[in-house]
Image (tube, rainbow, N blue to C red; front, side, top):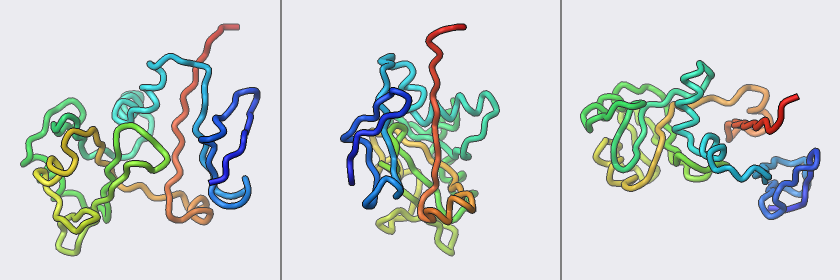
Length: 178
């Protein structure tokens, strides 16, 4: 990764976290912003994918379909606790080619796992282990994860980078009134 100081309208991006792949800034890049706002409440809204999903859904804004979450070894569908049998039923009824598992915090494609559907209709993880509620509890014990529907990259952006889905989470903060 090539790291270069970048500024935008006076807000600085942290140099050692301004990452782009390739030789120049015209290549694919991702920036991790530095903000003067030190209020952790705002960071929580944007960093926690479960909270972000819940808020966006509440206001009718588009988010990927969430099948369930796992937090503190408890499965949930929104606020409802799910049993292992309910999770197994959800898994059996999913017909997507892949299910994406993401840590509830983080970004830049860190902490993502994928379950892939076999012809028999069962899902397997990256090691080829058949997926079930019991397997998920063992593999992801102690963590906080969201299990989501695979989303397809928009056609034009897929030409640019076909192996990723580009998403943006934006947080604004108004500190003054006119």
